[in-house]
Image (spheres, one colour):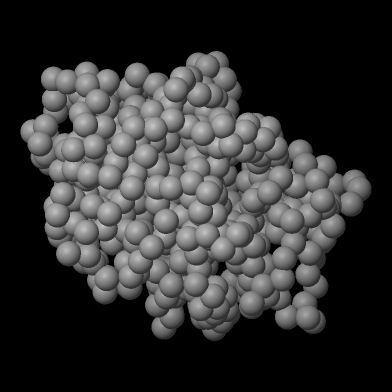
Length: 515
């Protein structure tokens, strides 16, 4: 049944302002034809979505945190009088957006999926109706804002964006894509053909639902990239009330009081184990059983690391990845896909109690956590700077990108901010374009040129080797922070990570929880 379910989606993608991708798939129990009709598949269509029984987040047999199947109620779910599953149809959401401020982001996506499906049912009689579109945006905005009122921060996902993606899916008779995303043998009917106005704009702000975000009036962007990026267009205004004072790390009281353990992985670790170590440190710091940690990663093999909310099949060409020896894993943070080659990549994580960024918004916390590395790069002669929301760049392009997740303690601890960064020391853009679905509308050569234009590897800006840069980063931290010292990974962290690796990160259900 899963094969039938995966074979017949109608997909619409929308790039939010600045480039962040949100996608809506309408899941059908029958193959659509040019008129939107089809023969029902024999048997019962049941994938545990939208209230039906099956595997889903929090359901028996489902790996923790699995975000694909939706079976939860929502603050603004479907009306009781509506058929919750007409003709076996379902809805799913994926993309490279961020969801923070909750330990269960899958419930947020489930809630949004319910509301999107509610909007779909209402739109089906007349998708061109301005009144129905307005109603849909308001329903989506209500759900987003109710989550924001609970402290959930969503970056790169909006009411208007979800509606545009839904309309793009409705417009297609196969995978539908707008604003340059994705591909399909049968293209979509453009939104300008659905409405005289050419879009689904409404009185509802395009940032509705981001009230819990710190960038009022902005939506963080990104597309599939070598790095976990959310780069905003040059000149984008960032309005954030809690930007910290721009003090050097050596003069900043919070940094100076940080009793930081600086760790290098004792040996190269498999990609799934890297994901597990990352979460294990975050959970231990959150519970107060581990102090603040800075960790330099050692990758054991080539990998593609997709974001927590991305679709596996739409981000990675799995056959090409396998043929080239790349392991695909899903991480615990949002954002875009990372293309990892151990000799070309510098990756590190910072695990700090939540009070380290107390009073700061999301954007401010990215800049604050990256400040030390900006200083270190500049002292190496690299013209590095922070670019909101979470990029490190130079005049030549992007050097690195970060992702974050906040963990609450289950044992009365201080909580934890996990902040991890991937930098490009070098880039094999040709291979990356073969493995990642960077843009199916571009030729391979254009994709290579695009990747090279976006990324400015450190190798092009310094004569130092990758290892020399890592050594210098470590030296800079220890020199700037008087309480920082070398440490190793404690046995309890390793034991927790091995269990997480076995139960979650090596489990195909976690990787494919958004197929």
